[in-house]
Image (cartoon, rainbow, N blue to C red; front, side, top):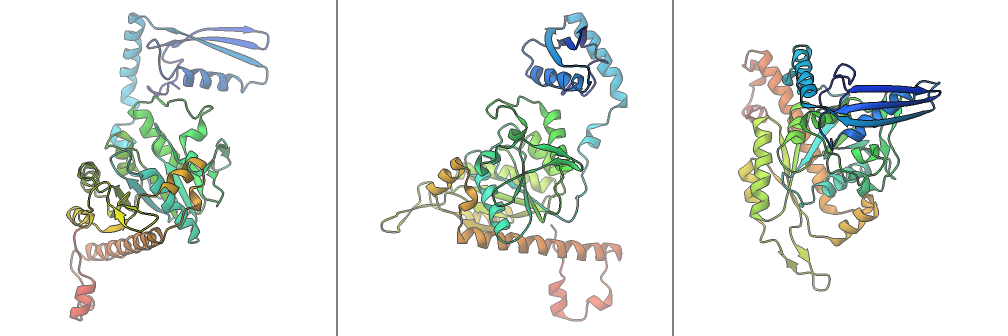
Length: 380
């Protein structure tokens, strides 16, 4: 299959020549442009398909480039095939939960604020608390979770789907870097490929029985975050920011995007809030004084934690030992997130009851002022 057009290369007239010499097969593929960034992917896919035949021992794949006339012909084939393809609305339809897991996306909108390390730290604390936890690294063009946890083993296909890698504590992990021969090679992919891949990293993976799945999102409000917000059955998002106004402005974009798509905000974590002196204990606000409580209130959410600038975190990430990091603030943050998720589940249940009753509470729900306060419904 062409990884961008999503049609097979035979239908697209991209296969130009096949030579069979004993057990060796030589294939010539015509690409749409010179220097196509997906050339290696196409070569690998062709090679893998042909090597499935017992008689084939060696496959060589070479490429050439289509002429303008051939490109025009290919465009016509694609346009004629569009009627049979799914619409974009169908491609980004909301997926169902696999079981009863809680999906939490960790979002910043801005790079460099510690979003990936925060995802890893929160997941590690949940695992330490006795939960079955997974991480989906949705930053498919800049994945870092495998490095942070020190995982290098390639992903395998199992009976029920892709088998996630496991960290030293048993945390389950899916990252694009675990699919590449060389983790330093770029993944130069366009939006449709990224959209489909993120969905597959949830649906085609055998996550097993997990309680929490944390999703590490890339910066910005582009294809990957949009796909996660629209496709995955999220319990909510955790925002990560620093004290800088610049950081908060970009984080606001992600918060507003979540609001537009009716994704609950679980809370805000202010990272790199201050640097504590090792000698006297004084707090140095190197990125400016914190006003994150006010910022969280403006976003309509809670400030979960103010975390200091700690050099140990960077060192542990580089060594692949992030699971060793512990902090009382992180433990408190986990408890707050869990409570907020449960509150939202209760609120959703009550709203469903009200909606099924035509929007009116029955007299049994209206016995006292205390009950009225307890079951008062507020817009999400």
